[in-house]
Image (cartoon, rainbow, N blue to C red; front, side, top):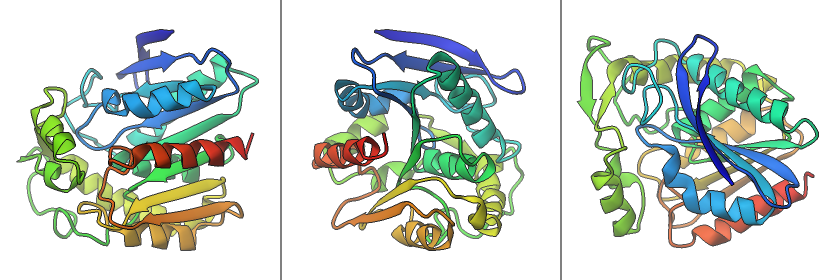
Length: 268
């Protein structure tokens, strides 16, 4: 059963969300998507989670797809974890007795990592995929960019997303993938990553850190550094040889989904 609705965030911004309820629910998983994309790109992951008894909540980050807000624009990096907290709180409210896991990819991984750092103890476990947690690959050059915040750059992320040409083509042709990215958003990554580094010891949640060795967008060293610096006693790092940025969309994705499900099952 699917329910799509707009949820009001902390400052009144309406976030588009979708809830898929598992028939034999054992737990809940909240998914946070990456830069310029939308929740529909996680349909196959959601189907796997549902079939394993995880009710799935997804939402679109402000300024993305069907959510409100200036397109691909953040005034403050805290808007990312605070929007996510709105969805996590909703999931808790609607499932008071269920453990709630958090899965974040790329910018959604940054969102999940900052959420875990800012609001420790809210998630039963956090799964990070290709998460931007450091800035070892200076994708946008040195930050902050020396351009007016209101400048928009072309989205050229498609090249590094996946080894499957069909996924790259679908991304390029997807009308809901944002075609422009604001300098304001990019510069908030710089501020946010500095904050993440400075507060690494505040991250204590169980965490599964996943990264593709051939990631062309976010350096796998980001995940190694993050893993090494956080204070979690329950932490696992997996670097996948020959996989690119979107490990959840690579041809071997079902194997990775199984590993994610198994990790969450072990923490129920």
